[in-house]
Image (cartoon, rainbow, N blue to C red; front, top):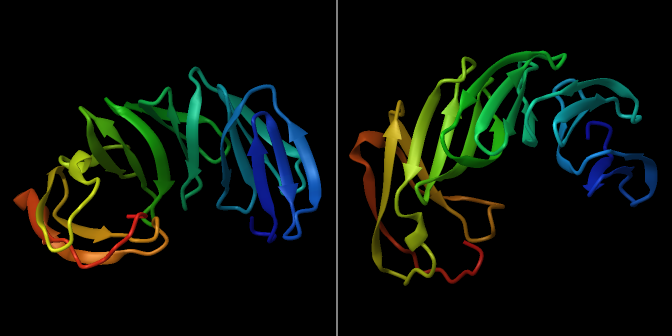
Length: 212
């Protein structure tokens, strides 16, 4: 949080702690808490069941909004809007006061979303057993990237050659990276590669890791 403290949730319980682990305040919910996000104005938004609630840093409720579906996750963009994934496949947009703007059907199961620097969002999920990455602009229209062979990437032999394949729509170039430390840092495979080529032949490096 912007005040240097931490917010954690467990089941229906919301807890704010300091850096020493001391409890500053606690709050109980009627529903299981599914997502917590620090907002662009330094406050807190909490998604639980079919509603999301904005709190200040002292735990005081600022407003609450009910929605028609269960909220899986929520984020807040730089322009103040809120986006939610509901029932795994509905992307919804709300203004800074939680008022509804629009819905978009994602057509597959998404389980993560995050704000981007251009006031859009990025989502990840699965479509027909392939990893799917979607980038939206403010109007909710998608740029799409399907990773077609992610299920093959389990154990890779050093120095072996593999094709990384994808299908894209509305994307000019892609950057491909890999991680050896569970996502804490990323190493370039190729940058600014033309997306229409749909594949890239990669030589697996001489690295041993079980956290790729």
